Structures are given as structure tokens and as C-alpha cells.
Length: 261
Image (cartoon, rainbow, N blue to C red; front, top):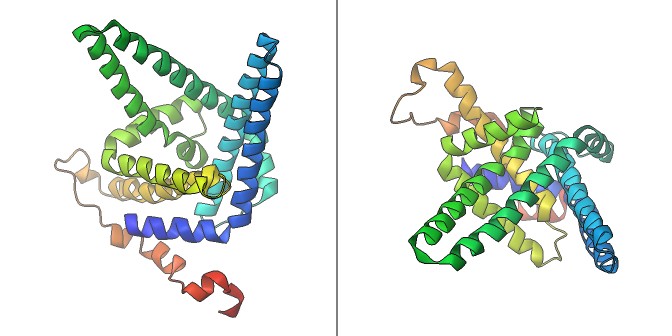
């Protein structure tokens, strides 16, 4: 399944290169614009902080709307800037809340871990290590929030809850997706964060979650396996057979000169 996921994410990303780049440039413009405005307003500290907070919240809105449109792409639907605009209008509150949650979590971890380590001793180290692993688990779980919000659950709190459920049910795949996203982010540095960058990562997360839902659909059809340990082997070849046929295979020529096929 992982091999097919990588192939499908690459194909869909290639087919929507301009859309991904446009969305990434918009997010970069908001991020860098907010950063420079906040720096320019630094003599007025409250204004500078307000601009930085507004930029963080705006980024959350844009990435949440991006996830909604990338969920459509993962489901073989065309990317639409109109749909992206509609998604901004319909998800802005949850996007802002999610950005605020991530920013608050990063702030607490960034302050608390050095604080506990500075105190030294077994207690301080134990607290720092505990907080570190809590942060790791949250990072692994929250990568599923936007795909869940885009494809399955419209409630903010329920999406958060299901993010942790998905992580604890799929720890290995969640760790793989986390490092896969890091690899995409590192590759993005080579092209100044324009590709695949945030939109590409969002697409990959939605591709992964869409395929992972096949597992739960299959388990729902086999209630006798619910709670069984060890967990039954998921027949991925059977579950993704239709998608495999739809995606197909492409030659190098078809990537560069698709009109010649």
C-alpha cells in the first residue's frame, strides 16, 4: 500500500503542479509578509505581536482550505481555485483555531523543556523527557487532523479526538508519514519552498488518509474481527485494486510530453 500511495501522491502532485505552486506562493506571501510587517512594527510591540498573531492565524486558514481542496484532488476531482476560495470561507474558524493550537503548543514546549532542563536533577530531566514525548505523540497525531477535517468529520473537537485514535491505531504508518512529510519539506528547500512544500504535504496527507479509510471500511464489513488480537492482515491489494487500475502506470515521456500519448 505504501508503494502505491507514493506513486499516486506523485502522479496527482505532478498533474497539479501549477495549482500546488500557486497555493504555496500565497502561503509564503502571507507568512513572509506578516514576518516583515511585524519586524517593521517592532518599535510598537503590541502592534508587532498583533501582526505576527494575525499572520499565524491566516496561515492556518489557508492550509486548512488547502487540505479541503487537496482532499478533492486525492479523490480524482480537479483542483479549483473557486473551491479553494469557498473552502477559505467555510473553514476559516477551524483553520484559525488549529493554528492557534499549534502555536500555543510549540510555545509551551519551547519554554517548558529548557526550563525543566535548566533545573537539572532527576525530576527536571524526567519532566522534560515526559513533555518531549507528549509533544512527539501530539505531532504524530495532529498530522491527521486536517485530512480528517477535510474528508470525514466537520467538528473541530471530534476531528482532534479522531486524530489521536487514528495515530494509536496506526502508529507505524503515522511515523512513516511524519518522516515522509519531512522529506518533502527538505526537498522543498531546493526550490525555495514553492514545490511540493505545504500544499504537496497536504496532498500527501489526504492521499494517505483516503487510502487508510479503506481499512476501516473493510473492518466495518467484518465485525467479527473487531478487537481481535493480533490484528488481522489487511488485504490491501484487494482494497486498492480499483484505485490501482485508475491510476495506472506512466512512462517518462508521458510526464514530460503528456500530449504525445
